[in-house]
Every structure is written in C-alpha cells, then in structure tokens.
Length: 107
Figure 1 (tube, rainbow, N blue to C red):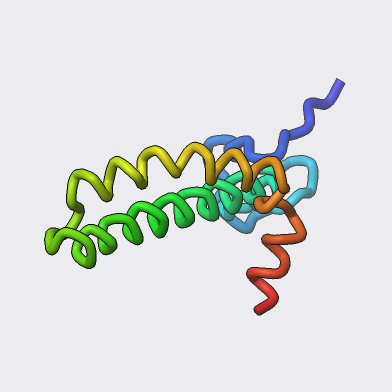
Figure 2: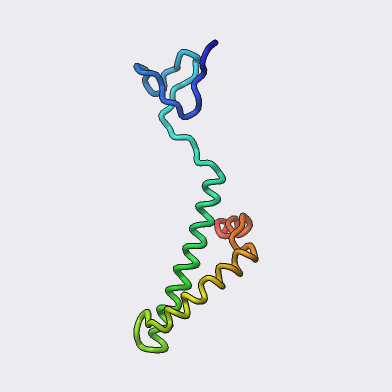
C-alpha cells in the first residue's frame, strides 16, 4: 500500500521545494491558509478588545473632565462597573457577528 503525504507534512529528506515527490505531487514550502473559523474568532476577539479599550479610554478621559486627573479612580471604577454590562448587552444583541464583521470590512 502506498502512503500518501498529508497536507502540511514535510517533504522527505533530499527533496527540494518545487520538485515533485515520488507520487508526482509538487513539494511546497508555503504554509496552508488559516482555517476560516480561526480567522472569524480572531476577528471577534479584535472587535471585543477594541470595544473594551475604547470604553476604558472614554472613562479615563472623563476623569480629566470631571476631576482634572487622567484616569481618576472614581471614573475608572465607573468604567469597570459599566464594562460587564456593556459586554453582556453587546453579546446578547449579537453585536459581534459575521454580519458586523462583513459590514466593518466592507466600509
């Protein structure tokens, strides 16, 4: 029985990139494309982290307006209390969805 080479498997010793292997397939050194599921999850994570950073930055700046200090403790506490509520509502309303990702990248 002839063993076929699996995708991502390294070529046998003595083979050069671009040369055919013993089964006639070309040996490639290029990495396989990322799994679409991984890319989608990374995009969700980026959206969530950006939202968190913007929300915390907004409360830090509001400390300057209210108390004259950047990231005043009272303002940051309000931001920390608001953050879980914000994320819960955003996830419940499917703000981070394929539709939102497509809309963001289409703009």
